[in-house]
Length: 283
Ligand code: G3D
Ligand code: MG
View (tube, rainbow, N blue to C red):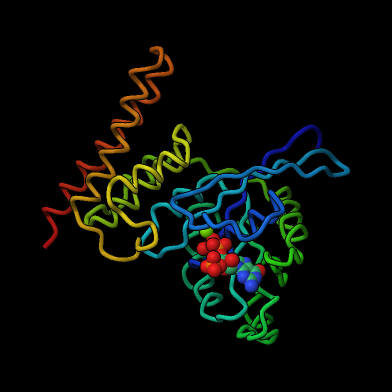
């Protein structure tokens, strides 16, 4: 490898296992930021200087809420490897990785992509994931595993270096367009509409994270209650709020740049259209 090589790494795992904490510890060496709650996808980059060149990791940290599969699967496209995070105090988070996260990840990213298991919060006493269980589950599911603590900064760097190295050796590319991934899905409930909207606004990259969060708030949707049923009016407000933002941006830019944003605005209109179709046909 020579020059700079870029690899996309995804974080997988249920809410609160420590995906964001591990990422922030690795990228910024900090812990305990009060704005941890992740909405949609947050993207971070960090360069690793290696003997054979520079490896730039593009790390996609996602929200783990179960109803937001569009966000997650949207983020898995073109992935080169993943860190699957379990909480050592809660064995169900490991089961969930194996039963739910891994199949969905491999479906979008490809079967050949490496996955490193991080058993996080190893600084805590009440351990629910035993070494026995790990040995039992490792085979065929994960390429490596390590006990980490984002809080204490234990084995976090090693974890990211490991998946970085593994991502280099497996290189087959899968290209699929994010708009088609999202628009091919069912969008029949307000939560699915919000999920699809978050997926698109996360992956289209033109919109800053803060804007997405602000529009969500203005829609009256509480980011801490995304698993609950969202009223239709709020979901529609959110999707059209996103569309509006792209439209307003388009008007303030020259034609070439504006066209990209116009396209963005139209994607959300398509989403709303699909929701109206899907929801009125459902029994
Ligand atoms: P997520 O991104 O997977 O949803 P977060 O998880 O990174 O937001 O972390 C969820 C909670 O777990 C946070 O606590 C965070 O401080 C805590 N946490 C993350 N990593 C560790 C760790 O290694 N050790 C310990 N003890 N706690 C950790 P709050 O209180 O903010 O919910
Ligand atoms: Mg998070």
